[in-house]
Length: 274
Image (cartoon, rainbow, N blue to C red; front, side, top):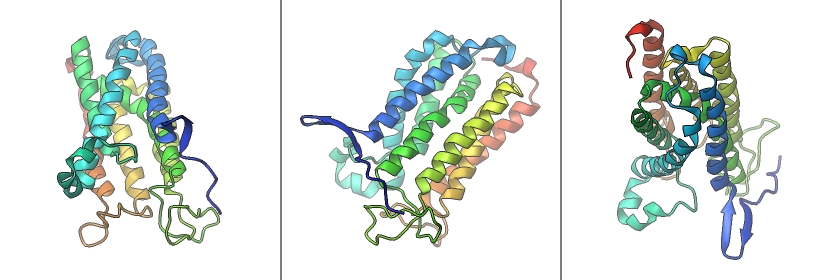
């Protein structure tokens, strides 16, 4: 099927152009903060009725979140995806107009910001990671839709009826819309799973559980989709031609998620401390 005629630029005023990619980050934070506000306000969801910080403070944290996602995402991309190029062109490190962001790097930056912000507010840092796990899927969903609009990060050739011919593809053959697969798995499906965990099984009452579920779900989804998504051109396949950088970076997230789930389910809650 042909690629839908969607301009990567949402709107332009003179020389100023705003891309859907940037809007995805912006609205990912805004909508995530809005959903986070609802979770924080519902104190019965949390361990001992105590969320990591007051609901009204989520808008202060949203500023921290935006900075940490951009800084962490860009740093991760530079270090893991194209370091030789940026060592030769250091000024290009701050040029994010053409993308070049790492979800893994953004995730690490966001985790550090949440821990520091929560410690500053006197809350329990592990519960703040649960909060991130509950809301991060919103931003991931929007970000993957923006990747599709940009016609980037597409998959291998396919004969399936929903294969898309991307305008940026030099071969002009139908390919897996891997961005939409990730939006569905890492975004929508994982959001629904975590929603059940938080509101049916009250997973936020066991600090670390929701963060662990998110980490496991994200890592497994990413590892699976990377089997059909083309690797970054400058890296190619790693370790004998069967692993991608995205899969390599997802493995420690998967391990960390398993550790968090085991910890949350086995550690007596009366021993938890801020």
